[in-house]
Length: 450
Image (tube, rainbow, N blue to C red; front, side):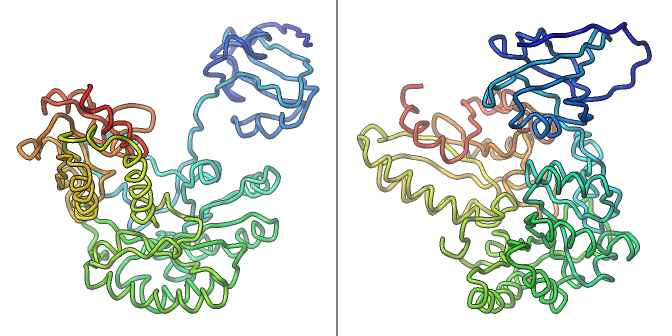
């Protein structure tokens, strides 16, 4: 049940609350006559800043008082009762990220070409996105309100870019003074409140490697299990990075890091029962070393940061082979197509596809695509553009082309250079699909009928 009162329209309204973007027709929201464009201002007297606030202040509540500003400018007050598990049927506007105030030496935004999409220059430093998507924050400018919000709303885990626990080095890397770089206080408050933290180190040769890296890992491991893990990922330089203070990551450097951190992992595993410090896959691939086995990664705590993705891919590929073996082998015979991927991952994928071809008589090829858009040492698949994909057109064979789903925006079939997947398909002259491995089984089985 609900009741509402309508207040007079107000002019010059300041945008407050969170905007409803969609309302399910057969939902509580529709029953309350709420529409896209309406804004929820307060719930039970508590101000709503975004949909996380709405979710927190409505969780478990069966009697609610909502203050709503209609898109017409009217203010509504709604009283309602609902069952505890009854969904409102709302979708909300996306969170506008809080902007970063650091001047990080290695910031990838500094390596963008001038014609890159505007969104690529957005540097977020947002504890909400850290909780929701695993985006990293530095905590160097976190406000008291943000700290309180993390603790009150249990926005755990948080992902924190530490980079170095040596304060001078951290301040140098972030491009801020030591007072701002010092996060011991905020970090302790989060940990003491039971907020779990995953840490990150962007490893920059000659700056935070060597003894600085060892100190960082030891200092963070001292807070285990409150600090659950640390991911160590290599600096990435494009051809637009001109800062002379940055040294490119080389295969020899990667081998040194693997050996150094490997020794420390053995110690930590004996003491903590976990490797705790995990190297990004790129370090193993660039160093020409095999990625560690499945047991090395535990529950893959930082897979979204490129830590364990290759091993996870191997595992999923093995499961895919078993699924295909339960089907008719002959159904796959002569299925032909091309998979496009970055130069770093291509050799790994080629070995697996060779096994697939041998087992099922498929004719799948792998084409390594160089990144000409960013250049430099950028070689990961997720940063490929439409123009990059077109450079290997003469190496494409078969009836379809597969590209990594990561090359597209999460909400639109468009690539980093603005080219749409339809344009790539038209220029290549064969169907192009953006997939992840979980799509591959059904795709191969249906390829001959599409």
